[in-house]
Length: 76
Image (cartoon, rainbow, N blue to C red; front, side, top):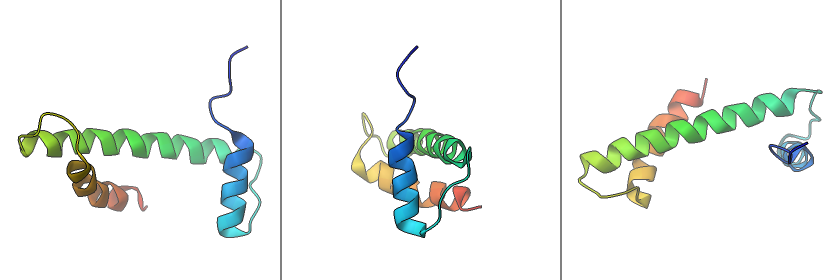
């Protein structure tokens, strides 16, 4: 028995606060997996932006540049 992968109750409270809707049984799993995929894509794109700019590591600037493209990709 390991620790939970993510706090289900917190995620449900956040979604309910922003949308005034309750979640179906497994909707929180889909939301969390989409979040993980989004963050993974953001970090990869920010790393590419950082290398192209000649920076040694990830910077706020490279993450901000990558955010717009990744948000558009995940908009659906």
